[in-house]
Image 1: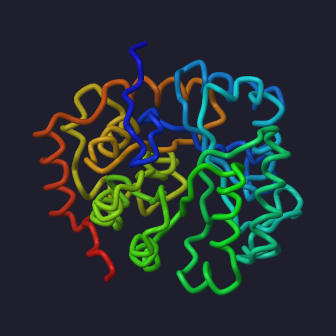
Image 2: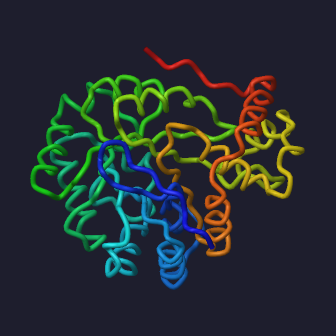
Length: 307
């Protein structure tokens, strides 16, 4: 298999593969599917064997941090690690957000980062992101941002990020303190398409989640609304020999501001298919433009950035 394409992650200096791995699928029951330690070991090593060097996880993702620490901490030099903070430190694996809501205080941020370091058996986390798109006021009023900046000075965190969405994303970008923004985006979820450019213009790294639309449209998709959008756009004749998953992934990779897109799976075969699709790179320019034209015609359009 050809090498995965790479990009500089904004001004961080990190060179990341255009396809990253999202570890949420390793969270296990009750919020996800059952997964055994052996399955987790297999897929995490397959991620690194495929050349993927960006792994995204969170305290909220059940057992994923423990699996990373147990099974690939011995290969730590081969990947960049992105974590999340603001999640409830000490919450049991699999706990629902309603039972353990995010807490953006100095104490919880520090406790959460220290917990993640222990679980993943590492001395540092490359990108630590505030989870759940907190507002500027929320980040500042109880010392959460100040705490993360202090952890960076201590060397426990290398770069600051935020997993953002509208409407708070624009003010997060405007704060001028974040090195990386993680944003939801795909061909059938285009709300943030223009905001990606705004993040990129600041020199920050741009990470896309949901870049294959939760597994790509199919008759069994977990998101029926995405399947309906896919059918409405009428893109099938543009696929040639590609599957819808491959087409949507390569559509995501075609966004000029993207540095990496994190895609999760617990199936090594799906992982290899994602990697094979990513090695083909962006769609041909004319195909990309025609896909956007049809999506626009079908009413699947970007939203204007919040100012």
